[in-house]
Image 1: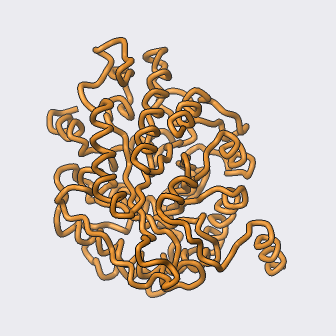
Image 2: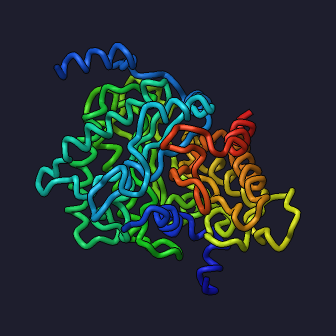
Amino acid sequence: MDRLTALLVKNNRISGGMVMFKKWKKFGISSLALVLVAAVAFTGWSAKASAADASQIVSEMGAGWNLGNQLEAALNGTPNETAWGNPTVTPELIKKVKAAGFKSIRIPVSYLNNIGSAPNYTINAAWLNRIQQVVDYAYNEGLYVIINIHGDGYNSVQGGWLLVNGGNQAAIKEKYKKVWQQIASKFSNYNDRLIFESMNEVFDGNYGNPNSAYYANLNAYNQIFVDTVRQTGGNNNARWLLIPGWNTNIDYTVGNYGFALPTDNYRSSAIPSSQKRIMISAHYYSPWDFAGEENGNITQWGATSTNPAKKSTWGQEDYLESQFKSMYDKFVTQGYPVVIGEFGSIDKTSYDSSNNVYRAAYAKAVTAKAKKYKMVPVYWDNGHNGQHGFALFNRSNNTVTQQNIINAIMQGMQ
């Protein structure tokens, strides 16, 4: 790591694109009416808007879990849920996640080459149906579900198009609008337990201070997202919508770098004016040398660390506190719930047999701080067990692989 990169990491500037590269690296970038009626009866879909306010929904969402490296996985620009080494998602896996105590599941989704050409930008019907099927696995279990547009916003991904530094912003914005019209329409009758997230870790690929013109494009995407979803009918005019700042970086979202909250002019008049229906997304992988760097240099974290040489010089409990407090002060106090949509640390037990003790301590601390500051913590699980993996479960046989980390998450929520 060069000095500039080290400095950027230390100052929490690298929290998105590099993280995703690391997380992806493991798997290589290498009778309808009857069904609907049955689904309605089983899931309790309702056209009635919920009255849940910010504090209620955060409490109900509890601790969350990411179905990572599945529906956002892609091969040569085409999404494929098994492309990065995970098996096909099953209802049994989701039931195991629920049984472990998680109340929310975030389902990252990429569209990429499954979007047709202009002017309609039609999403491949089979792909959209599969997304709905996986959503239903969780929704039918009574869980909260978050779906997003995930890998489409990366300069580094083949087929990426939602690019803040793209040349034809008018075309990008029109495509984005058409894609969200289709997604929102597909799920318009789901109740408040389904949350839409506008995008994921979108930035221009540079880890320094945000480019103001590019940040303005990101803000415009968020505004298009809110306006488009609200006008698609069903429950979408009251649905909770989740939006990120630059690269889901906390500093670049709370600081004076250009983030703008979208207006919400098309939401249901049935929602009290004092209540919001917009959430703010941020990710947390600090310090990166502990959480994600794929070597054995830093394997311990927190006040209980026994070897100073194995502990990062930054990013400990005090830093975590200040980061989450800044989100609380900026957004939660104004009625905007915050979702820590990704957090976690990779398995380094091959370098240090005590590493899982510190991974659990880290998970508990992040979760407890989220609880303290009335935020929703969502653990990142990429399905990979073993060296450098984030997984808590074995997706092939639906067993728990990191009970100590799950225990720590649940203890943090108490």
